[in-house]
Amino acid sequence: MTFNALKLNVSVNKTPLLNDISVEFQAGSLTGIIGPNGAGKSTLLRVLAGLQETQSGDVLLESTPIGNISKKLLAQKISYLPQSTECHWPLTVERVVSLGRFPHQTGAYLSSDDIKAVDDACDKADIAHLIGRPINQLSGGEKARVMLARTLATQADIILADEPIASLDPQHQLEIMTLLQSLARAGKTVILVLHELHYAIRYCDKLILLNKGLKVCDGESSSVLSTQNLQNIYAINSISGLHQNTPWVLPWASLDKK
Image (cartoon, rainbow, N blue to C red; front, side, top):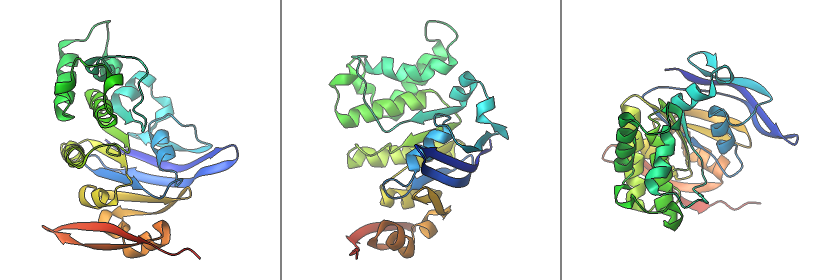
């Protein structure tokens, strides 16, 4: 399945958020969108999900602009996980996860396939032990995993996730990144916004580096997270190396700004 963005331009109140952004995504690949605060990462993800209007440019799914695809079909093909984990209603965990099946439902009740998809998503996100509990009584990290399970329950070909590990403990960060990588290896197109550069270089096949609404570069993770890019874009020094033939990078010190 091809999924591409062509010459995206987004402005809000005459402030440019994305400037002539073109990117290509591959099925079977895990892509990370990185950059400093305000770079345009979340805006790009919302455009890819069909939730943010553009002044110009197109997002193409199998060569068809997503604006020409029915909302129902698009929701079956693309699953989107926003940053916020807020849920103001005391819905049970399984009810929240089951909302991910809404694009597939044809009646008022879940089908056997829907129930299987919900159970599978709960297992993958490690929240089966939370079933029956109201989501508004969970911790921030638990809520984040419930929302991820809702995203996975859709079983979409394309998964978009905005900082999916930001509020998780190290164990669950590792498990979720491994899970998302395995979904990509199984043929899905997985696209993440990440601030955790050490996970970006370890797990992502490709990185897109944004800064002030511009695409600085994209390509293999180790080349995008070069010492020069970290200094020029993030204003940091870093240390890096290889462990078990896998590259790693660690932000080490902020550069003096003059």
